[in-house]
Length: 529
Image (cartoon, rainbow, N blue to C red; front, side, top):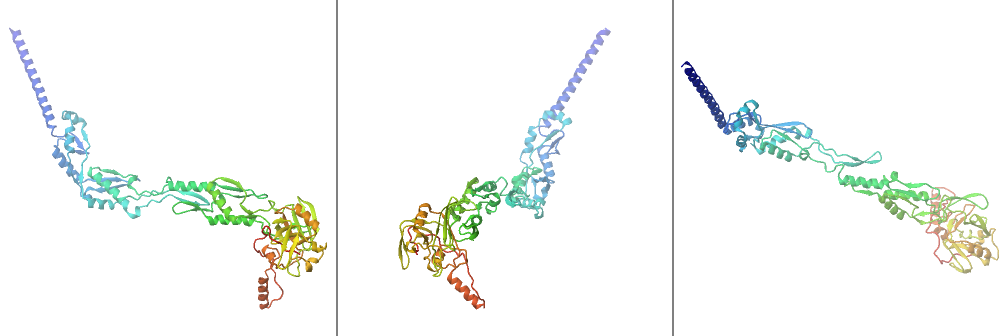
């Protein structure tokens, strides 16, 4: 009997325990699901929105708390140099403007996770858009330190400058000048979205118009380097002459718009120096005579003459090509021989004082002859200087103001003046005839000598004619042929008159006065006798 009662008691206790557990589980379930239901309309425990504690708050309560917190809204602005600037929300008239983001955040949370939230918390980041006063916001931006004039460095463009004789690209300076409208727009967007931080980028700054990568700069430097790479190696015997970067750099002109040109005046200066150095036209030369002594003789029309206009055009083209060019200068007159001695060893030598001429061919004497030159007493002295054979004619008619003479051989070397036979001399050549009984300017020769010379001599052969004593030549052919000893009679008279007026005595002479172009046109008659 006792056993039966004990079993009954045990069963009762089990039922009570089961009921208690069931009741406890029910209570826990009620609590769990009750809290779950609660958190369908409230934020979970330890929930933070943008760092603000909103746990157990409804959407409205959270928005009210956020609005209250946004009253202390602060926007931190980081510029390109990582300097920090800040604007208070109150300075921009900011107010929180709910846009449904908080409600959406609540819907996204898992209400069943409220227990886990007790231990781990729940962090939510949402946009908290703000309303603002446009005028206040713009003013607040304008008053930032980064817009103060003393803190602003405007950008500077890249440039090309001549530094220590070398063109160099000077890099741009980006400066730190911000674009106000751009920054205001960026701040407005940040405030509208409730962002607490704003990072300014290069797009918010005034940029240099020209950088080292700009085509304007790179193209200009490419052109400059191309020009400086050019070189002209002049092919002139006995000389080493060139135009290279040292000369070209002074000819380059960099315009304000970075176009690159070559200064034509500088080219002209270079060509003039070239001509002054290498032109031998009418130069005073040292000449070793057949008598063994050395004289100085200038004037005449023989020698090298650089065509300055055409040479300048070639120099410009060569520079613009950017290449190395090997060539001789552009000449409009050439001598027979290149180099320091442009007369060479084939020439006619005429010694008016000794009344004799010599013809050398390749250094070998081929002919010499007595002559009769221009009449000194009548002012018809033959022109002295360095000339060249202009043309030959056989037979020829020599026509003057009051005469007409036939000759078999005529070899012109100066204006209407040349070598020719003179049968009327009856074999009387040499001596002192020229002083009083000389020709009108031509060089008279015995017929056989003239014939031989005519057969041997070629056009452009140099003719060196000189006097051994001072002389004044006044004839028109001496003027036109640029005779070395030509004196302008009118100028001399003026100088003498001026000297007399000043109480001076004596005469002044002037030699080597350049006349017109030397030489005569093909077929012109010379001056005979």
